[in-house]
Length: 282
Ligand code: C2E
Ligand code: MG
Ligand code: MG
Ligand code: MG
Image (tube, rainbow, N blue to C red):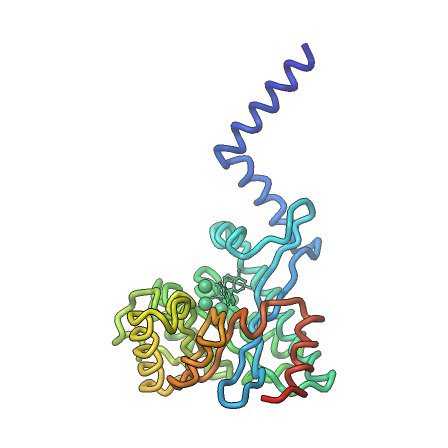
């Protein structure tokens, strides 16, 4: 009898799990505790300067070491954190930790590198963002010019006047601004000029089929030209081959980022990549 009941319970739970609500509930509960349990960590991926072949910056990418699951990627928990607002305290931790790491690398004798952090829509529209960024810079002593905030077109368009004002205030303290996943947001180009931007990051989907696809060649070229016309630094994301690097170099892309150069990696491995890059032939 007990065995039967156990089986029914198991069936019941698996039905619940299938519907997603229980899974979501438990994920939400563990997400709420993840910060205090120190389960988040940052991976770092290089940005390489085309002119010198040197690493000139890093992008911080969030990971969650869930106690029972594998290492979780942003797409597995950031949408939930956006929905329930936990992205605000999590994002505060990300900004602070990335600044702290940047200062630690410089104190260890590495050259000054830029550090990029991703900021999603809810975080971007939250009143605490500016305070959090100023706080992290002040507490860690990081130079604001080295910090870059990456925001997607979509996040900027939710409330455009507010977005412009937040970006202007970030600019005022010296922080740089990048538009992430550029080309996927369908925003009117005329609006782009309203934002104080420093960098355009060409979405990896435009890079993937380079140099073979003539459509992607045209799109990549057009985005590079657009960035150039607006006086912005152009970074290509998702670069996976030597042919892509070669194409992008010949078409005056400023920086490249992708698995071909370096995969995102924990701080201790990223530091080796930086040291190796310093002594290698450019
Ligand atoms: P993103 O900012 O556009 O970051 C690029 C993503 O592409 C990263 O995925 C990176 O691991 C991956 N990538 C890098 N090089 C290559 C490549 O050569 N090929 C391919 N196929 N992929 C490559 P990841 O780490 O899973 O992050 C996904 C997205 O999650 C990020 O896209 C960003 O929008 C968001 N995200 C990451 N960290 C944070 C964070 O701390 N806060 C917020 N709000 N969002 C974050
Ligand atoms: Mg990014
Ligand atoms: Mg991107
Ligand atoms: Mg992306």
